[in-house]
Amino acid sequence: MAELEVASADEFPPGSTKLIVAGPGMVIGVYNCGGALYAIEDRCSHDDGPLCEGTWEEDTCRVICPRHGSAFDLATGRPMSLPAFEPVATYPVRIVDGTVKVEVG
Ligand code: FES
Image (cartoon, rainbow, N blue to C red):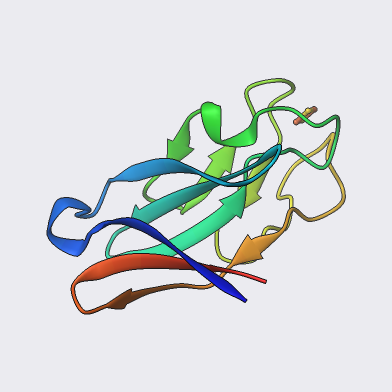
């Protein structure tokens, strides 16, 4: 189990996003959606699109795949619209001693 540093909690207020490299070919998007922290793999389950390089909706905590437009729930990774129908991996995020960290299993 590895914990990766994302940012200082002070520098990651609501509305913030950041991409972090979690390993070879593995990128994770981290979001502060209205004060709740989420992390989701930057790879769409439909056709491997760069999920976190698209837009996201802070009012619904969803990220929109830039390739074909599927929306994914940041909390669960579940697709909320077609063409994707399989979930994307999500990861626990927490604040430790003032630092936002994501747990990568
Ligand atoms: S690659 Fe994401 S919706 Fe198709």
